[in-house]
Amino acid sequence: MDLKTLGCVVLFLIQILYYTVKASVCWLLPSRRRSLAGEIVLITGGGRGIGRHLATEFAKQGAKKVILWGRTEKCLKETAEDLSQSGTECHYFICDVANREEVYRQAKVVREKVGDVTILVNNAAVVHGKSLIDSDDDVLLKSQHINTMGQFWTTKAFLPRMLELRNGHVVCINSILSQSPIPGTIDYCTSKASSLAFMESLTLGLVDCPGVSCTTVLPFHTNTDMFQGMKVRFPQLFPPLKQEVVAQRTVDAVKTNTAFVYLPWTMHMLVILKSILPQSAMEEIHKFSGSYTCMNTFKGRT
Image (cartoon, rainbow, N blue to C red; front, side, top):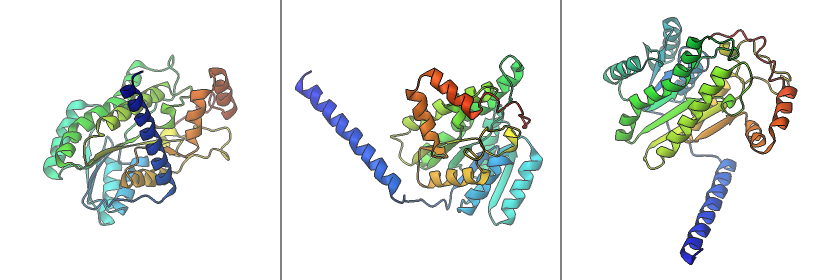
């Protein structure tokens, strides 16, 4: 190894140490939070569940306009009316994110009628809740189209204008199941793993794009209708997250420009354990936690 190469390696290690220490200090100290005043937020799956709470939280934190996308008009209308009554300008549009042409068409309508979206929240998702053998092929495809490909279409529709404005934020409501899958949700886990890879690549790709950032939220089991009936073996140790908590932490991550958020923070340990323990040990962890049977009583909406 010549002197020049050695110098580059040493400089690289110093930089890694510097950014590690900087991140640790920033984690301990209160972070600066940017204002959301003037921001136009679009939330997919915004009519109910976490999406509804996200809309409420963004409005509470001062967003100028909130736009809801979804497939069920009744839910979208109810959420939009609630936000409007609280004083926030809110619009809703019927849009299936699995349909590429519909996404591009509605994105054009949004720009013309409401304005340029500066915060895009990819929240829409479905779960089938069956094993691979018991799953219908069309249902499996639908999961991938909504949970994964929908992000491609929405991001392609709105990101170019964010880059032009040098102001934008792409948010993904992912799941810890993207990194620690369980049986009985093979469609959901696969689509969320793809979604995570999409966001990791996008986050790195926007490093040199001033004013445009990404946030990926990876929550543990959340108390939503979508996962109704799912049972955790030790609910006292691992209680389901409240939807409003996920929404609050997500909006706070946008304000602090945090790239990845694990909820609760103990999920970091699960990811670390998976990377160092043998497969047999991980299987025992899943048995102990009840992962093999937690979907046996699943009856959530798809």
